[in-house]
Image (cartoon, rainbow, N blue to C red; front, side):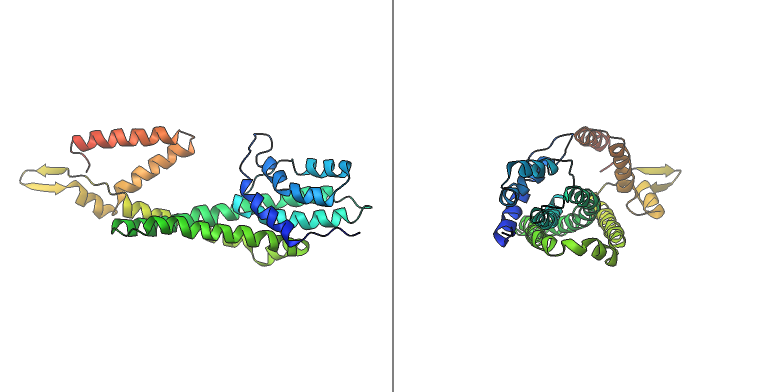
Amino acid sequence: MEKKVEKKDLRKIFWRSFCIQGSYSFERMSGFGFCFGMLPLINKLYPDKEEKRVALKRHMEFFNSHSWFTSFIMGIVASMEEKNANDPNTDNGEAISAIKSGLMGPLAGIGDSVFWGCLRPICAGIAISLAGSGNIFAPLLFVIVPNALHFFIRYKGVFLGYDMADNFMESMESFQIRKWMKVATILGLMVVGALVASWLNVTTPLVYTVEESTIEIQSLLDGIMPGILPLVITLILFKYVRKGKNVNMLMLILVVVGFVLGLLGIIQ
C-alpha cells in the first residue's frame, strides 16, 4: 500500500516548525528541532523500527537556517521522504541530507537580508515615528505586521515546499535569488542609515571664539556633513561590535560617556 503525505501531516510540520530553535547544541545547532518537526511524518512513513531509526538519525544531523524558512525546507524533505518510503529498492537518504545542506545556507541569507535587515528596521522606523506623535497603535504595528508575515510564510512554505520539491533548484536560478538578496541587503542598510540620522540626535553646544568672532562647532560640523556626530558614534560602535565586544558593555559605556560629556557641556 502506497504511503501518502496528507495535508494534516503538513500542518503538523507547520506547527512543530515553531520549535526549530527550542533545543540548540554546538554540534548540531537546530538539528534537534528539525528532527522534532519531522517526527510525526517519520512515524507514519516508516513503521519498521530500523527504517525509522535511520530516518531519525538522518534528521538529527547539523542544521542551521533562518527559522521562518524552516517549514519550506521541511516541506521539500517531506516530499522526498514520501518517495523514499514508497521505493524500498532505492535509498535517497544522502539526497535528502544533501538538499537540506544545500538549502539551509542560501535561505538563511535570504531570510536575514529581507526580514532582519529590511522588514524589521522599516517596521521599527514607522512604529517609532508613530510613537513619537503619540499614536497608541505604534507598538501594535511593530508586533502585528512582521508576525502576520511570519505566520503566512511558515504556513505557505511547508505546502509550497512539498509541491515544488522536484524543481526547486531550477526555480531558484530563474528567480535570480542572489541578486534579490543583494538588493534587500542594500535596502536594509539604507533604512538603518536613515534611522541613525533621524533618531540618534547628538549635537555639541561648543563655541570657538577668535577675538570678536565666534564660531559654532556644530554649524562647522554641519557644513562638513549634517549628522556627522551620530554617524561617527555609530561607526565606532559598529567597529567594536565586529571585533566581538560585549554589546551590553558597549551600551553601558555609551551611557556613562554620554552622561559625563553632557554634564561637561560638550554634547547635548
